[in-house]
Image (cartoon, rainbow, N blue to C red; front, side, top):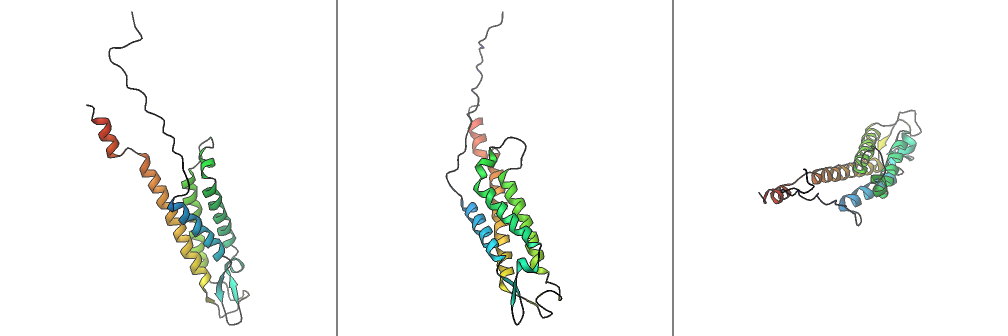
Length: 171
């Protein structure tokens, strides 16, 4: 009584689109470059006084977390395709980059704003030097580039107007 054929053919399933990356985008280069500058800036002089200077890592022990977060961001950036293929309910590599660079930015802001205590190795006449400001600019650039890339990829996943028009044009 029932046949396998129908007088109303069903549309074929949509093709599976595999997006392969062929290199780093401009945002990837901005994130990678800014993170490398941030790592280097942690070792530059952040605070100065008349006889000497102190880098960020020796002035604030919390900046070692920024160092680890910057290395983590570089690892995620390099192994992004492998992370995206892992099974399970993991955050996307873009979300990992935004999280790592955002936390690094927050801790860098705290490190720049907070002077070391007067009993530290620098003495009471402690002033700021250029290293902290370089680190702050690098952290801001890395975070904004990661945020931009995550937002650009997020908006590209939905249906856009041209795809809606193509589907609706057959009616």
